[in-house]
Length: 50
Image (cartoon, rainbow, N blue to C red):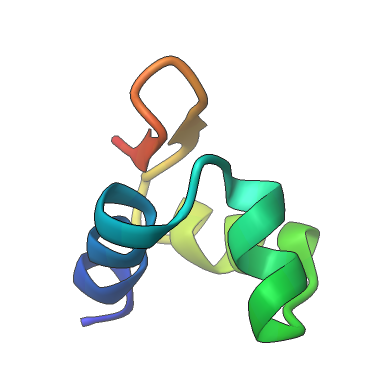
């Protein structure tokens, strides 16, 4: 669920993961660590977790 939400937000509203995290008041490393637990990593070339 988190993965889907984050990728949708990145695709539709944000130019980068940093912009998303700043706007939402999230710690980027914490978010990346959480999604890494299910083997997803942020790819800035496509602005998505893949």
